[in-house]
Length: 202
Image 1 (cartoon, helix red, strand yellow):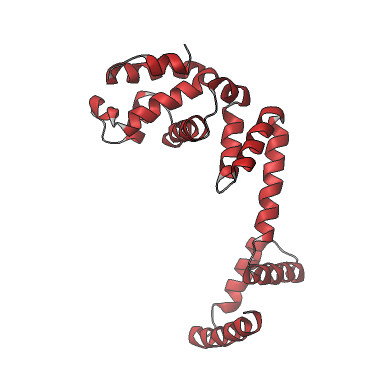
Image 2 (cartoon, one colour):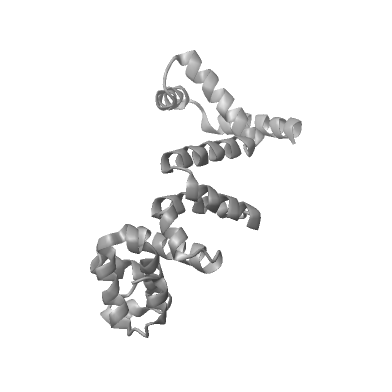
């Protein structure tokens, strides 16, 4: 049974809840339909028919799904099927893992960029797609760093090199250094240096 079949059946709340149990055994084959049913159950609060107060409690107890995983199924369905009008066959071709991977990349993306990511997800192998997304995120993170973040990174790197230790060990050494110092005096020095830094760096 495919997504259109489920959409065309007038199911009672109990039947929808029961249908999820049967579909979850073949998750990769049925994740689109599961997303649709769980979306309806969540939106219409059908879990209350079974005496549950929250959707999270319902999916964890009834289906042994993690709440966050069930929410991913729902958000994938709402985003890719409802919003981007992706058909069920294409969604299955891409697969649940790759849809989860590209979803964060679609935030604030243009229509063209969304299409490009979906096309890429169709043809690029999972490991390669994961590496590309990771590299892009790191580039964006580096590009969006503030001057303060760059200053801190450079300072930490210099101190780690000087002490020849890890960042974690450096934290311990700095704690040792500051433990007996006058806090108010340090705050005054830091405040003056911060003002000077912000004057110079805008």
